[in-house]
Amino acid sequence: MLKAIGLPENWRKPICGVALITLVSVAVFFETWESIVAIWSRSETFTHGFLVAPVSLWLIWLNRCRYRDLQPTFSKLGLLFILVSGFGWLIADLVHVAVIQQWAVVGVLVGGFWAALGSHVIAQMLFPILFLFLMVPFGEAFIPPLMEYTATFVVTLIRLTGMTVYREGLFFTLTSGNWSVVEGCSGLRYLISSLTLGSVYAYLNFSSYKKRTIFIALSFLLPILANGLRAYLIVMIGHFSDMKLAAGVDHIFYGWVFFGIVMFALFYFGSFWQDKDTGGPVPSELEGEMGVPIPDSPANSQYYWPALAITAVSILIWPIASQRLSALQAAHTQVPERFSRPALPAWEPVVGPNWGWEPSFKGVVADARVFLSDDQIIAGMYFANFGDETQGGELVNSQNYLVPQKHPVWRILHDDVIPMQWAADKNGDIEEVVLSSKDRSLLVERWYRVGDKNTANAYLAKWWQLQKRLSGDGSPELLVVLYTDTPEGDYGVARQKLKQLAVACCN
Image 1 (tube, rainbow, N blue to C red):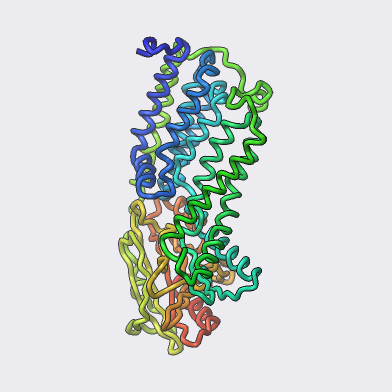
Image 2 (cartoon, rainbow, N blue to C red):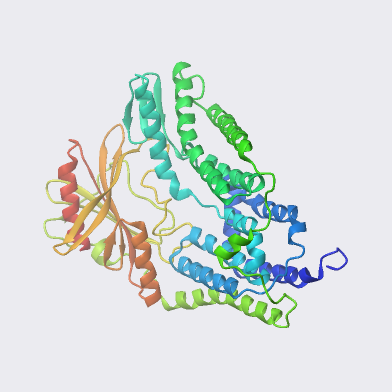
């Protein structure tokens, strides 16, 4: 059949090898690929993921005449890349970091192509192959800093224009009305779209790697700056129209119009530096820098299929290893009695007051809520155990909100990480949040407890989780929240009391 469609002899085995590797990769890591597609389907920010693979194939097809006479061969470096990516997937699977799993499965796929086609061929197709990594729905970690940047940018410009504005966290007030920076205002959607479109434009219009790199960098940086300006213009439209315009759904339309203008300007100015010959093979001097020699043996070697069989096995071993390691650990799915029924000096259990807020997280298997008093303050203690951490219900998860955005009652005025001394020779940190409503404000301290260790650092908590899983340790992993009312607005006293309680219960 391949001969019938005019495929050259030197490409018939490699194309079959690529198809085989693709099928094996998708089948073995089906759940991870399914999670990628699910995010594409439900999030408009990542809908472009459906187009990444077709665009990659199209870019290769555009230069098919350049690739026709290449001699594909098996690459041991590709096999090594699979092993590294597979190990990355295993680590991410053990500690339930979905985005790392997703990067890893794309890495396994790319490594499979590298193994099946050889280093020389992959070097010629470098951009279309690397473009496949944009299938990964990444970027959610950028949302909080992008929101903070947008709020700071808008408030700064408002003050520079001589207008009065009052800011509390991500909320700010003008004389015309109230505004807040929510996730949709972070500009992540514009950033991902710009990076994707800019990457394709750079490949099609520039042959110089320097030009491509600069243009892709601009495609990443420009939408961040433009999003701040977009948010400022929307606030100004709302302010000068007495909140009749741009204060509702229409500001989304204005945002996309502005983004379209920005992208048109970027591509227009990029057209002045475009090269006539683009998308060609890697120059010989670049091949030398990459250490990619011209292959001596073609894919028609008698060892090609055995080598691909070894490649398939190197893909298959990682889910099996994950199952074996997971079976070694019997997860502790309860909250230990020392937390659910604490006996602490100077603190006595009391009936919980009605403050109108209590911590609640998705995916909790077991939890305990206790209220204690030392005759000066009443403090709430909450311990959440996420058990085996099903997808979307992990101990360390950016979706574990204290207060969701646009909450009808509560909002976050302050969110920071502060130092914590657990013992004379044991320092650490905890997350401190101030929640506010019309009736009261609450001081909240939150951290992760993994085994007998405490930290507010999500990356350190994941590292400790990985160590526990590799050792088969089944000791509990908890999300701890302490909180108290601050009727006089004295956060200093409340902070001191909560720290004392934290050391008493969790040291």
